[in-house]
Image (cartoon, rainbow, N blue to C red):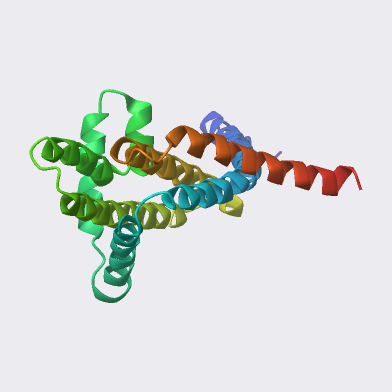
Length: 227
């Protein structure tokens, strides 16, 4: 007669089988959500294009020097980041500030540090306080320079953080996450410009971005289904 397995061993075997099934289910569920995020990320790409085009178009109504200072700030950050020094500590400090601000609301603690360009927002408040004392055009240009620097810092390091995540099936978290935060950051920047410069229209930015994206979706739909 064969030896009977002890009750403890039977429980252990059944537990390992249950754990294996649970693990497979979690992997399968994760991949399903990964596919959904990937599809949503692809759907956001037309909005990435439209917000970029419309933002640059709206910048055309501003003085040439304002645009030059803004892009000089963004380029200055990229040169420092690529050739001199990666200011990751500066980015991490900004993350900690947002975590402290939203510590009472758990869902935003995880999302806000990626979505909100904290240094750009802080600079906007400092600008309005400073403008009460000094309305010099030169001061505006330097703040715009810093806007370009800080928004580039936030986008680059947020993209790096999302890209480095492990187990990102189909790069879904990266495609969806970065597309979403890019759109939100451009919207925040457009809103800031609307507050600072009268010719810049945030409402027009939103409307035109939607219309351009709508046109892209319409063209894709016609190519796929109405040929």
